[in-house]
Length: 139
Image 1 (cartoon, rainbow, N blue to C red):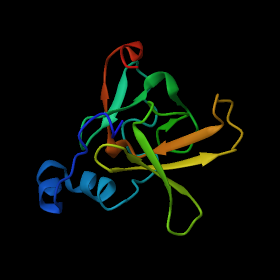
Image 2: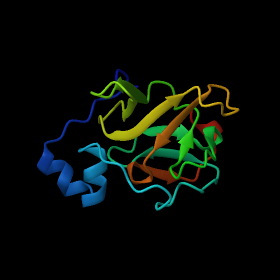
Image 3: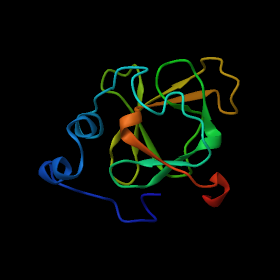
């Protein structure tokens, strides 16, 4: 997706001006929210989840599942919307928005969930926003 749209680049001060302190901590400083405390963990309405930093559509609600981990879990993102990179410690794989490079969470593979990808994209609720729309309207 980043090659189809302009990549969003802002200074730290510009990000602080448009994000709440908690959003800034998670998206820009790669923080993690406390599990089970935010709004999208047990949220299963039909629509699209977008990046809170740049509004890029990231996930269809049809790819969200209850992993019981305390964070929203998806088995895949929209094509080209999410980048993956190994954490510096090499133990996990970070997922970020392909447009603004905002930290979303981590992807875990091979945990035995009955999803088409056998992946759990574990996402901080603070990093996403829900848009009630038909998932079929986003390709």
